[in-house]
Image 1 (cartoon, rainbow, N blue to C red):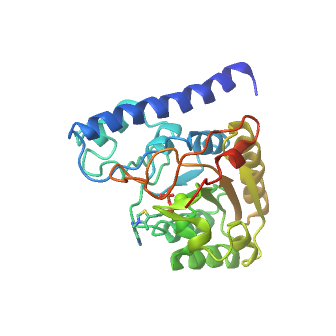
Image 2: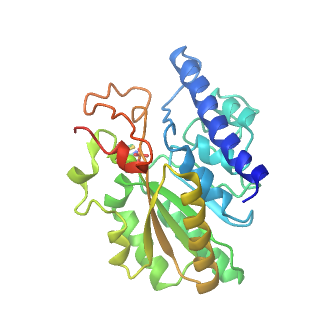
Length: 269
Ligand SMILES: Cc1ncc(C[n+]2csc(CCOP(=O)(O)OP(=O)(O)O)c2C)c(N)n1
Ligand SMILES: [Mg+2]
């Protein structure tokens, strides 16, 4: 990757951080309605991942979507306008924080129901298979979503029908206030893909270049083999689950240089 490209990745991550810090201020000032979930701490995940896609590859995600929208090419102005409920927002101000979307940018939302968008991802990929192209659908979701029935139905169908979906679990080690180990039978979420005979890999999500490399490889595999693949990207949510989270369930660790996501492993639960 050349210097210009590296600077662009850095620019995108800082832009996401600044937009969300401003968003948090506006939320606290009562200017933004509804729920709002910040992506602060996880910026390297979608930045590295989406840098590896071609524009024809679809992206779909859950409600922690501001950063994903920006990485897909939706402007920071449109994201902020959407947060503020303005008609100039990416969903004309009617969706709000959890429903950033743009068909033009191949960003299929922003979905509030945990796990609800995974079958939609399989459907998008089925549409592409039917149309005879080799577009890849990139579906991002949280660790908590992998305990939902939809996750298992969608992965099973994707493998059975050889759909071109890259499943991307953002393991930020919590579903709201519940630590992964308390809610999931296996704490290495990638193991769940094994149950469906699907190739998978665990990646350090605090390293944008590691995410980029793994995503590039995974997208190439999905496109050329015509099969789904799962990435488990290890990360950490620096802020509360949503704006109303008093965070009594954890203390924030002090990051240790060069230890990647492991320096953000939970201090308590
Ligand atoms: C079907 C459903 N059940 C419960 C909720 C409430 N809820 C919102 S976010 C969340 C936790 C999801 O955690 P995870 O998938 O790890 O995503 P993260 O918030 O960590 O990004 C829950 C239980 C919901 N929105 N939808
Ligand atoms: Mg989570």
